[in-house]
Amino acid sequence: MIEYKETKHTLQRKAVSDLSLYSAGYEQCAPGHHYGPICRSYQLIHFVLSGKGELEIDGHTFQLGAGDAFIIPSDKITRYAASVTDPWCYTWISFLGINAQMYTYQLIASAPDHYILHGLDVDKYRALIARILELEGAATTRYFKANSLLLEVLAELFDDAQFDERSWGKNSIADEVKFYLDVNYSEKLRLQDVARTFGVHPNYLARVFHEKYHVTPKQYLQGMKLKKACYLLRTTDLPISVIARSMGFEDQLAFSKLFKKCFAVSPTDYRQEKEPRSSDLGGQ
Image 1 (cartoon, rainbow, N blue to C red):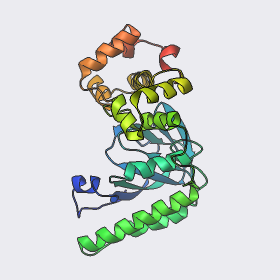
Image 2 (image 1 turned 90 degrees about the vertical axis):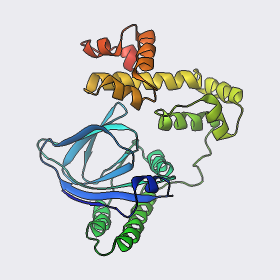
Image 3 (image 1 turned 135 degrees about the vertical axis):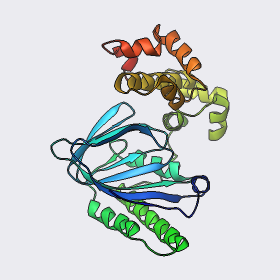
Image 4 (image 1 turned 180 degrees about the horizontal axis):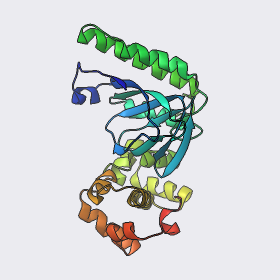
C-alpha cells in the first residue's frame, strides 16, 4: 500500500475549511482482503483500476469491477472486500470540509446506482492521484499542490457524472427533506430544525411529507434508523452501543427501549434469532 496524508493542518482545521485533502493512496489488495465494518469522519472515493470486489453500505451490496468508483460518505458504516479469485487494485482520495458532504451527495445524486459511478476512465484518476503520492518538498508547498490535485479529481468526477446544476435543489420540498433525512439520519434531528433549514413552517413540512410518503418525517426517520440497526445487528459483530451511536441515539438504553417497543424483543435477542423478519428489514 502507498499512502499520502496531508499534515499541514489538523483534522479539526480541515473540517472547518471549505474543502481540504485528508489522504490519497494506492493498493493492490490480497485475495479476500477487506476493510470494516467501519465508520469514518471524512468523505472517501475509491477508483477500481483492475480486478473485482464488493461494497456493503446502507443495507445494499454492490459488485464492482474495473472502471467503477465507489463513494463512501462520512458517518456511514461500510464494509468492502476484494474478490477471492480476482482481487481488485484501487486508488483512493479522501477529504473533509464544510462543503465536503454537499459535494459528495451531489455526486451520489448524479449516480444511477447510489454510491457507485460506472464506466469511468480510471487511468485519468490514477494519474492525478499518483501525482499526489509523488509530492515532495516543504509542507506548505505539498499542501497547496495536493489540494489543487484534489480539486482536479473532483472537477473530473463532476464532469463524468454529468452533474446538472440546474436540477439540483429544485425537487419538491418532500423529496428534498427525504434526501436530507437519508443523508443526516445519524444526527440528532428535530422537525423544527429541519423545517428551518428549508425555510418552511414545521406543520407545512409535516403535511407535504405525509402527503407524498404517507408517514410523518419523524416516523420515516425512526423507521429508517431501525431498519439500518436491524441490518447491522444481523450482519456485524459491532457492539450495540456502537450501533446505537451510529443511528444518532444519545445512549444505548434509549435505543434499546425504542427497539423493544417496536419489535417486542431486545436488540440482543433480535441478533440471536436465526432468521430476519421480513417486516423488520423491508424497504422504506
